[in-house]
Image (cartoon, rainbow, N blue to C red):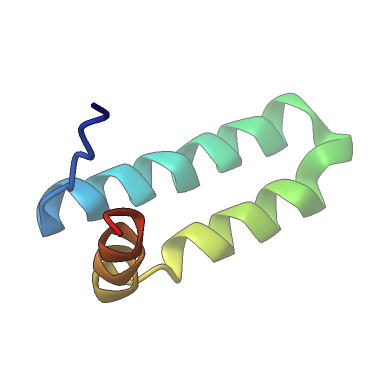
Length: 61
């Protein structure tokens, strides 16, 4: 049986900030990937915890 782990709100937002920070580092290391990194950063920072919970609930079905 596969166990589905759900992050707390704090864990979720810490995780999204870490991914956004990683995107910044990627842009500095690979200037040709700057636009993709900026898009990814914006996407992750716009994620909401409520949407995440809805997604996790849909996985349990």
